[in-house]
Length: 141
Image (cartoon, rainbow, N blue to C red; front, side, top):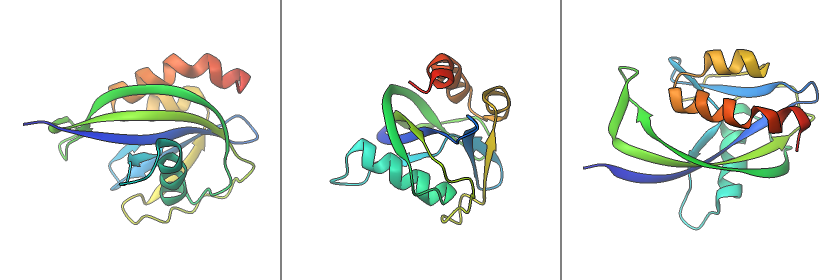
């Protein structure tokens, strides 16, 4: 039985136009995102997850990037079919460059170009999503 889980996260751009990626458990890379807590809206959840996974707390919300679905990444790197995430994504910009993850399950965060980010993202659906919004990132709109 597949559990459906609402999640939220963001594409965060720094002043150089680089994208924030975060590492989970030392073995996979994704855009900062996570579960929406009870009573929390998607935008608030996205900001909280960005802070927990990267230490970036000053973000300006630019626009809603829509949502996509994907399975959780299993320990073997393949889809874990027990959990289907609906991920609501937002575009943010920040002037903060220092990265210091707060969540111990996310040991590293990194700024990189959109091209590098697409190569490094672990999950195929994350790569497809980032490619699909890349024109909106270049304009920051």
